[in-house]
Length: 307
Image (cartoon, rainbow, N blue to C red; front, top):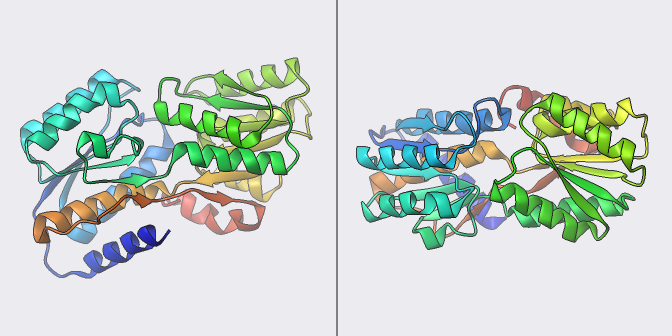
C-alpha cells in the first residue's frame, strides 16, 4: 500500500504544479460504451488532463473486440503520442501492438488488466489490482460469512481478468463454485441468476464481476426467488449496489478504485514527458472491500462518477 500512497502523493504534487503540459497522451481501454465502470476510468483520465494540462484522447471499441482494440493501439502509435495508457485483457491479441508502441519509443503504462504481463510487454508499470488476489479475498469473505456453494457470474467471457477473478474466488471460497456465463445486459443476468438459484437451492453465495451489470440484477433475482439465505457480492461499485449493501440486501463490493486507474497513468506520463520521472514499480489501486458499515459514505461519490 505504500507504493499506492506514494503514487497519490506524486499525483497531488503534479496537480499543484503551475506549468501546463502540452503533451498528448492516448488512453486505449477495452471497456464497452454501455459499462458505467469505464465512465469512471474516463473521468479519472479527464481530471488528470485538467490537473496537468496534458491533452488526453480516450478511446475504446464499441464492443469487447480485441481486433478493433489492437487497431486503436496501432493508430495511436502512428500518431506518436508522448505516452500511451492501455488495458490488457488479452495479451496474445494486444501484445504485438503494445510492443510496437514500445519499439517506437512511446512510454506505455498498463492499467486495470494485464498486471501479470505488463513488464514482459515493455510497459513502464501497471496501475490496477491483482484480479486473482481480489477474487480470492472475496471468496474468503463469503465463506467466512457462511457461504457453502457459489456461482461466479461472468458478463464478459474471454476477458482474462474476469476469468482470474472467478478463479481466485474459487480458491478463496474453498467450496464448490461454478461459472455462469452471461452478457452485458442486466435483464439477461437477472434471468440467468434466477434460473441458477431456482434449479439448485444449495447455492447460497453469488459473486458478480460488475456492480451495475451483475450485482444489481443479482439482488433483484435473489428477491424474486425469495432466497433470503443467499449472500450477494460484486466487484466494483454503483450507486444502486451500494444502496443494496447499506440496506443489507448485498454483502459487500470489491472496490478497485478505477478512477485512479484513469488518473494516475496520465499524471505519471505527463511527469515523465516533462521531467523524465516515473514511479519505479506498479501501483495497486485495490482491492478494498466496501461493506454495510462503509457503503453509505461512498454512495454520493459513486453517483458523481468518482467511486
